[in-house]
Length: 392
Image (cartoon, rainbow, N blue to C red; front, side, top):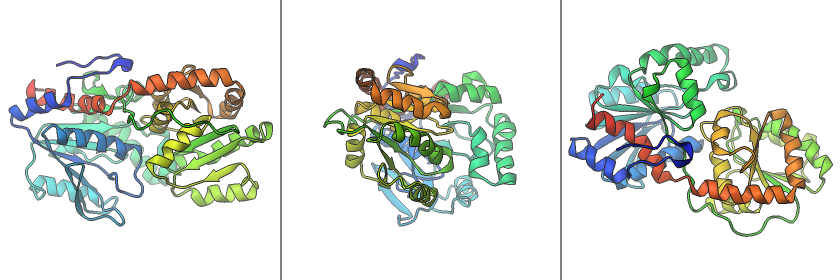
């Protein structure tokens, strides 16, 4: 059973075949550890990604238990898409609590373990003696200074760059794009241990409806420092001056929302900037479909999930030229990747060039339709399957 190495044709044996082979070798129960789960108010792309592969593993006959931290307004235990979710412990307390539970089997026996590393590692190679796998979306690098205060940022960076490569050198690791893989190799991961599994696009995100009569841009994501939404507004302000009919919609919520609202108030930008918070899937699809462009000024991403969702709806992207965006956007074909300081300028060019924008939109649909969550689920499972069936 092999996977293609061509990023545009990433296919694997079906999840059902991989799961059946694992079960034949005595591995059925898989525990998946993550900082947050899909129902968490702060959930984002990482949680969507995990839900897609866990539900497909469960459907294929594996028994998946998802262990995560407590979420406001959510039960401590529930079943979602067939797999079990257990939410116990605070944002930081979940790590020692979960490790202790796994070591003592308080959550029941398991045959294999998947650790989703989202900033803070679970250090599974130090305590897990069963087949295990790490899903690491991207190296945080410059993000540490944005998400943590000085000493804590230093500690996070030290763990990521110095400790982790030694601890995880024999652990199969899955990341979402080639840029993240190169980052891990640069930190010392063996090339044979790092695998790429591109995200998928749900067929729900498809072309339809009509574009707005006026030029329109949308940005979707958590309102956190790493997304650089203030800098994005500063880039789009001159776009509005040059194209006064342009309208910009911000979708999402997060800690920076009050700061963004203050910026809009101080600049008297209510006539061209709209903040609509989190929206349901149907409303999000409508926004993707009607917008002329989607944009992102993010500093770091494992994969630009909102960019490929919008691509499925026929909307090209203008985004910062970073690792996760390079995999989600085919530069010059399905959108444009530029330095932050050129983002507004490129938006103006595409808003004015109707033919180029339409061509990019058509190619974006084709690109999105080549990305599937079924393939993602198989590619994440494949290294674990090989460890179990073929041996280390």
